[in-house]
Length: 297
Image (cartoon, rainbow, N blue to C red; front, top):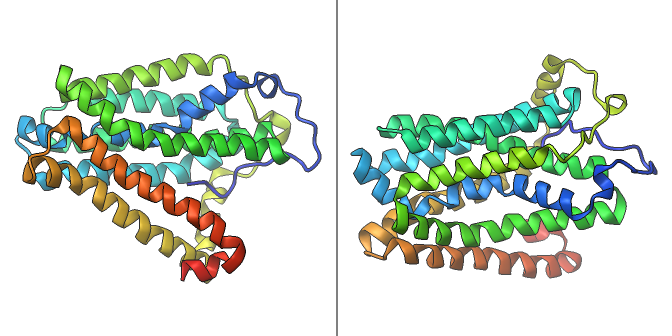
């Protein structure tokens, strides 16, 4: 999920910023930011039936906590990209973390399904800042093979987080209840905010986009007139639609209908993620032989 306007370093530019020289410190911070998309949802999946019972909410209402999150995440991506191109990365990421902490605390304190959905939207608006801008920061700091190496590492984090999230969430549910899961997310947000103090601004004023935000947002409309782009977006959209239907429905299918213990749910969920990772590996080998468009069809 990447916005269209993020400024990139000039070709051939030597990147000697302090952040680029810190190595694993930068990687750790960016990995945390990249993982916010997964941990925000995957951590509480085993607790969804328990949340519905505690709040007196129907299954469909609790499933809307995932749909609401996706709405907030989608809108946030359109917002944070142009804002960060104009004002730098640190301020938008910090604001995003503040929203994430507020949304997570609101979820932990919610007394109704509607309130939980609303705070999930706030949580998503904050979480997507870290996910989108961590990729932008990689392009700010690195280029060539080093940039590809860093991006591959971040994508690996995105793949590992869904494997571990439901397993960890199931244990938190067993030990402290579903509200504790969201308090853990509050802690993750605060820790990340503190770590962000060690990361200098990666987009200096000289490389920022001076275009007005209104004009930047209007440019999104031109993308809707590109048939090829809409084809790829449609293919991706159907995949993610199916995947998140699975994400929203399986906690109730496994735990409520098949009576699988919440602590075991994470292992079943991980099997699906392992399948996606396996097919991605096969796909990477087949693309050079058959071409991406042919495989996509």
